[in-house]
Amino acid sequence: MSIAAECDHTDSIAAVPVETGRALALMWSDIRRHNRAVPRATVSVSAGRGSACSSVNWSTSPVVLLAADIIAGGPGAILAELLHQAAHGIVGSASPSSEGRYHDKAYRDAAVALGLAVPEASVRGSGYAPEGLTDATRAAYAPALARLADVPPIEARAARRSRVSARCQCDPPRTILLPPSTLAAAPIVCSVCSEPFAA
Figure (cartoon, rainbow, N blue to C red):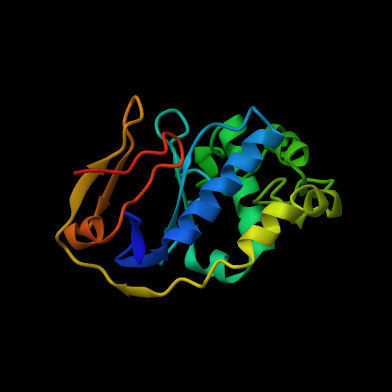
């Protein structure tokens, strides 16, 4: 049984096993337990590009999309990307003037607080973009990383043009677009309200 998550800026869909969706939702919950400043969000998977630094709308029903290549990178890559996005959630998106590539000092401070390794000096063009996980972060998240070790790789397939809008029970509700057959195949559960999305 699998569910699918679709990114609106790509023409591919990732078939996502239910266990993968649950593991990612639990990881985001773990991140929020470690730092309550991290906002609630839905974590999903895209066979194409994942969320760019400035693409998540943190003010209303944020959805963090992980690219399939991040999932293929394993537990450390998944945690590093989720922490990267969580730091953006704390301070807001990167400067729009840099097309979301620049990470300022406020971002650096949030990233360090979350356990990301960040350069001591700003790097031209990207600022204080994270460089990975610290050893302390790996230790703090060891159980969650072990849980992610069983997440299978994601395979892309051609997208269907017919899509339906499905909403969860959050207030305000989160909305996803997906093929009708995907919605009918298996429940897609919101990581915030723990209720299935429905058309």
